[in-house]
Amino acid sequence: MNTEPYLVSPGTPVSLDHWDPGDKGGWNKGEGSARLELLLNDLAGLQERLYAEGQQALLIVLQARDAGGKDGTVKKVIGAFNPSGVHIANFKAPTSEEQAHDFLWRVHARVPRLGMIGVFNRSHYEDVLVPRVLGGLDDAATARRLAHIRGFEALLTDARVRVVKFYLHVSAEEQRKRLQARLDDPTKHWKFDPADLQAREAWDDYTQAYQDVLSTSSPEAPWYVIPADHKWFRNLLIAELLVQTLRHMNPQYPAPTFDPAGLRVP
Amino acid sequence: MNTEPYLVSPGTPVSLDHWDPGDKGGWNKGEGSARLELLLNDLAGLQERLYAEGQQALLIVLQARDAGGKDGTVKKVIGAFNPSGVHIANFKAPTSEEQAHDFLWRVHARVPRLGMIGVFNRSHYEDVLVPRVLGGLDDAATARRLAHIRGFEALLTDARVRVVKFYLHVSAEEQRKRLQARLDDPTKHWKFDPADLQAREAWDDYTQAYQDVLSTSSPEAPWYVIPADHKWFRNLLIAELLVQTLRHMNPQYPAPTFDPAGLRVP
Image (cartoon, rainbow over all chains, first blue to last red; front, side):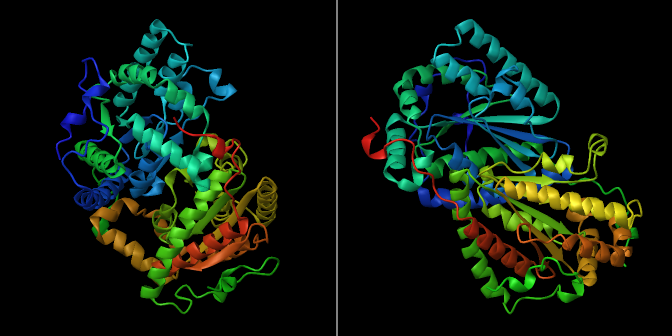
């Protein structure tokens, strides 16, 4: 599968118009779902090697508008990993303790240790999205934060934490359907927040803010735009990119520190 | 399924001879595996309610001898949950920072928050097993630690954290096979630790220490002995007990704080 079209090219201006949220990459649902099962199996095998090796970590950053599919991605794709080797960090509105520190303090504490896969469901990128749209952060302050983020991700890369970032790209119409479905189903009311409607009103402002966020794509910490109107294609593409990333990291079972041939369990 | 025979009765002396590690509870593998799939599906549904409700937590304690099946249980049974709602804590030999605190300090920090399921892969019970067998902890000190554990678990119960504890019960012969398999397969060498052979030599001392551990079974924080020579039966019984426990906790979707009928997504 050619994933190149979904990579945000480092160092070029970003326009989200470039990607179609309804894109299916030429796949149909049946073939895509069959392929996904193979990929999920590959992911489990690669993760075991990563865990056994204990010399590298993978940090997956998930960003999206409300109802963009972050939780579904965690459930379906991340759910393929052995839970012992995964740590999920769900970042909500900062607590008073978190607000009393720099904006990277709370995320730094949740970086996966070597051997582990970490998932940031929302992340440090929220701090250049929400305050920007709501007007608390001007362009100069935003630029400084983006520079700090670049520095932080370079630090992780140096410490053998591979960073890969996914923006789940939904259309306004698909978001409308999903939010309405949460209102219509009593077992989904808990997922609905009336404040989501305000973010929806500021759709274009968020588009602009996300485009600046995506400009932090770099060879070491790339952003991918994931067409997300079709959940099965979203899962397929993310699984494909994670397999590629882990294959490239190429984790190996460690050599034993003892002589296996010289031992016998009595 | 009648799970009563696997409960350690509170307040009575415990002898592990009472349970057969090869017990299959009258099931065969085919029927048991089919039943397991249904239970795993139930677990996912119950967990979503627990997470949505956010008013109770579940703490699952896993203890076993080496190769007893803790990791396999996490992978197969705990893997059925949405990873966003689960936190796994793998307790290894304590760090110098941890040793500079009381023995419950590091485990207290890993207790699941309300709405979450926490898994302790090894736990505070290691502190009344290893040092006891190796001779560093006398009977009086052991009794004090067990009393502290009872107090700690009562605190959690009061804070709406349901505690359920599983001892995975393997036979010496099954452990021998599994450890030898780790020696024979290069992709399993990383799971083998020559120190496991020393613990194996002290088999009877550990049996005695585990029996005292199991005596902390209480109505609020029960211990179950899980026959674990057959992996499929181990998974089946644990899944059954978790379904029973979560059904008894009876989590409910919360009432919405807004009027769903009065809202429409524009």
